[in-house]
Image 1 (cartoon, rainbow, N blue to C red):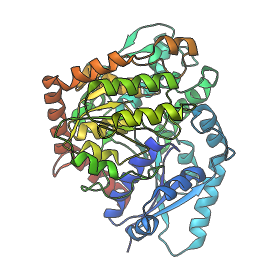
Image 2: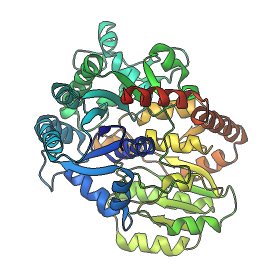
Image 3: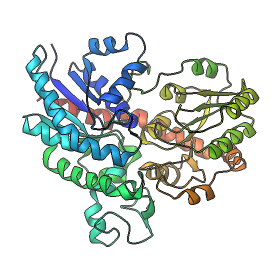
Image 4: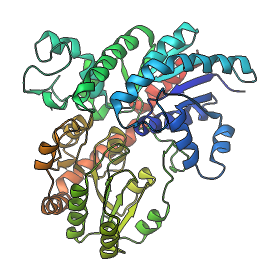
Length: 469
């Protein structure tokens, strides 16, 4: 018999769905019944990407996938975070309450006692508490990101930010010794989309700070103590339980929005150890055709084998003829896939380095496997994650990154990353044995944290004990 019934609600983005699904597997391993709530669009993507029998396998494990509307029309752009957040904040609370009522009325399953809710879905905490459901707040981002959010009132008081969240001064912030430095122009809420919609995200962050303070009984994070010790000293109530994985073999489904290309793993098997440049920019980044071509030729110029994840929507308007010609030139040495099991790729001995957008999931997955980074952030908290990698841990190098997503087109064009720089940075990183050694040390610390008696394992036990109560 299940030990309890837990609702799990991620923000409707790939980078949030994956760690929430990994946590759901841990809950299922402990005998809990899990209802995993996606938006209707994300639910359809997850189900379509599952292997045959995948949904039934999840149900058998006690993880039930369900969905509610996000408030947007089917054809609207969900990569516009301002639009997405505005819609779901207004429309999802009512649908979420209705869903809980339907679950309770349906019978046959344990009563819902807990919600594990996303840092960006604070409205759900109020719905849950009103219905007698207790709340745990889960952050799939770095805890440094949470620290910056919590420090907003102080930053306003000190004149660093104005009341709308925009910087009053151009300077580099460091909230405490040992924390990643971040320039005021790169704060996450000001780099998530068009400037005219910034207020939507800033207002969300401020509301969520209050929801967490008032309604959540515990805050857990997908991080580990040795990665962010300064933050945990500053905010000891943040409990790291990561790096999360669904299972040691990395075989369980984790909610990918696109089907995995398994053939690239066979190709990796044929490559020498420490030879492959792995390139992936997550689920949201967009490159224009000119930058795509510079990156492609830069990889070609390295003369090294590479595996590159190129989503179907990664570069709108890219010439199919150009891409076909490029594939022919690098056939056998360069492999392009639409999506893959990134954790299994990064765990492969053939991978030498990771050219990454520095999303926190990707960051932790690289850390877990001791892979050095070439950092190319796109938006939001990815600039902060780059600071961890390059300034604090020193497990990677900076690429001359393109302008933030909010930058005007002429500025973005002026900051094009050229092919020769890409080639040179890859060679510099692969030849940097000290950076590689530091990545191995951090990998070992992550392994100890999740192992028996480790700090993350102890915190996970505290969390499980709470939701059993």
